[in-house]
Image (cartoon, rainbow, N blue to C red; front, side, top):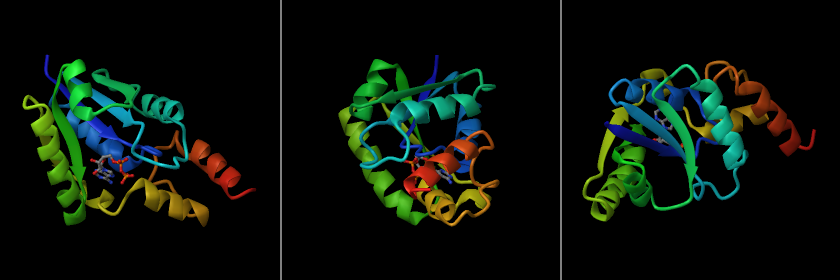
Length: 163
Ligand code: ADP
C-alpha cells in the first residue's frame, strides 16, 4: 500500500489545501493529512478543531485520513508507513523553504521522498494568513474557504475581534 502524507498547519483549511488533497489522493492508496502541532505559535483553531474541519470537508474522499502529530515528520512517516511527503508550491518563496525541508527530511529518513504539486493558478495567492487578513474586514470568503468552514471561521474571527 502506497501511503503519502500531506503535512501543514491548516489554520484553517483553505480551498488551496483542499485542491492539493484532491489531486494528491488520486495518486496514492492512502493520503494522510497531518495537522502539525508545532507549526503555528498562536493558532486560531486548536489541533482538534482543525482535524475535525478537515475531516468534514474530506468526508467523501475514501482514501483520505486526517490526523495530527507533535513529532518530527520523518519519524511520523516511518511510524505510519508513509514513503512520500506532499507539498504544495505557490511561488518561489515556498520553494526555498520546502527545498531545505525536503533535504532535511530525506536525511532523517532516506525512505522518504518529497513530492511537490504546483498550486492551481486561482489559488496561488491563497494562504491561511491571507484568509485571516480578509476575514478581519468581512470580505467575501466563498472562493477561499470550503463552504462548511466559513461559519466556524467567521465565529472565531468575531470572538478574536471582541465582537
Ligand atoms: P499556509 O498557512 O501558508 O496556508 P500550511 O502550513 O497550512 O500553510 O500549508 C501546508 C501545505 O500546503 C504547504 O505545503 C503549503 O505550501 C501548501 N499550501 C498552502 N496553501 C496552498 C495553496 N493555496 N495552493 C497550494 N498549496 C498550498
